[in-house]
Image (cartoon, rainbow, N blue to C red; front, side, top):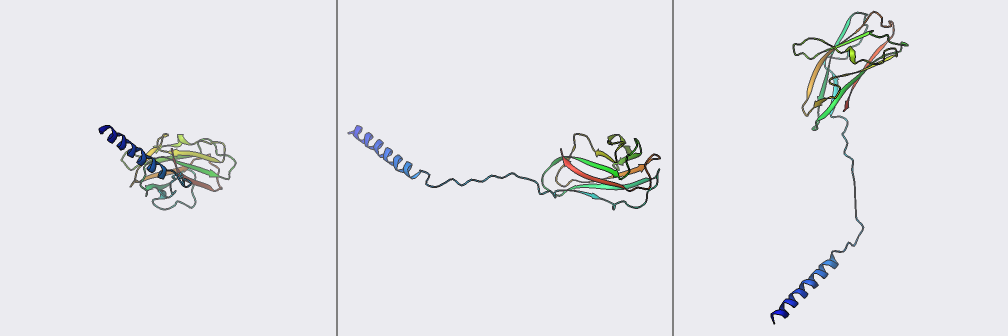
Length: 169
């Protein structure tokens, strides 16, 4: 009698499993989606901290400005600050531009002319900060003084232009 009860119980479990199994069949197509998460492009803001420098400049004189970088987003980035100095002149002789920065930490001005490349062309490119980049977390807002001098062999009576941007490393 006990054996019959066990068989009946197992049969009941089997029937329930089959019934549930039947109802668990997929009866429609599968709906799917995928995304690639990207930045909005507005989280990091590079800005002139004391106004865009402009006007006439004379050989051997510094033009000085302060540039700021701010992170308005929630993510942390490792970035490199890139820049270029260019002109319509046919070639910028080696050493015709000197560029320095000052972090305002009491250590004074630091020459960064060595990061410039492109001598002999009309565009010099360079970067600010360590070659491997630097960390910019949420709330980051740092301003740094820069100054540029066009030396005695820089072409005169032509316009010079400066552009800077931040790239993720």
